[in-house]
Image (tube, rainbow, N blue to C red):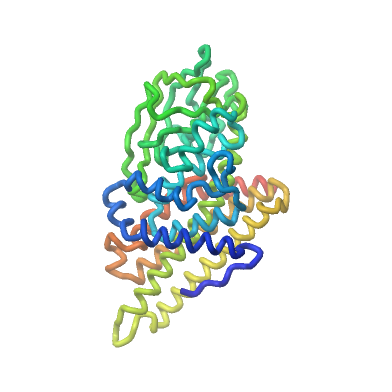
Length: 389
């Protein structure tokens, strides 16, 4: 597979050693089972502990909480290599803690951090983030789930939907409205709701793709949550959620680039083996042009993602500009994934329409990448506002 070598200021010897470790793990523990787990609608819970054993779950987290401090490019390596299995649902659930834990690490008091974070990073517990509601997704400031203070507890009422790892999560980082008089962002807070809290019910959702992910609808009916589970201060939830979104969108862009490459590699391999009219598919000009177009999209999107990560790592540019670049990177990368998945299925022909190929699976999954974490339309509008267009 053609791939430009990474810039040395992006990835050093330690990054590449970690890449080899994760790549071996994925090839051994995930790829051979990805299709079967997708069909089964789940994957073994034991995979969390096996991923934790090689440091995959804890990369980038404080050592005091059981993690391994690392720069942003180590996180990109993990995202890219997990994507090689071509199973977005598995990757989303295995990594759901990456959107559930950062607010707790950044704002939670030490006792809450120690109770929640280490067991998740050891692969013993599962964490999920619950923001989206049936009445709205990207308009976070308008969410309706409420948490009323009652002594040393909050009483939570409301619903969340499309929650990754929502069915079997042990800890849920939930966005709630703690100030009913403030209908804007200032009335929002984050609470950690334990999975066994009375009054919490969960319903599995059926999806077009991401079959291996337990995506759930959550219902909170008078759930009593200790005040000690408040993440940071009351009213600080909106800013924490927005910071979380920026990192999630960067990771989704990196994953989309990797999925696009997976489709390209599968299409290239098939085109070299499949013969039509006395020659390999790859010898036909129309197929070669498709492959070049796919490679160009992958490399262009990845260059944008790496440049963004470099700017974030070194804090280059003001916050508005970085947010705008993040939005643009997610749009460009997911469009590259969409293009490559479509072209790969076309090149594979009838085989591309068969379940079991990575390209067929990613073809079904690409839409959630373009919607989740902020839809393409929301990303473009947010970028325009941040750039004052």
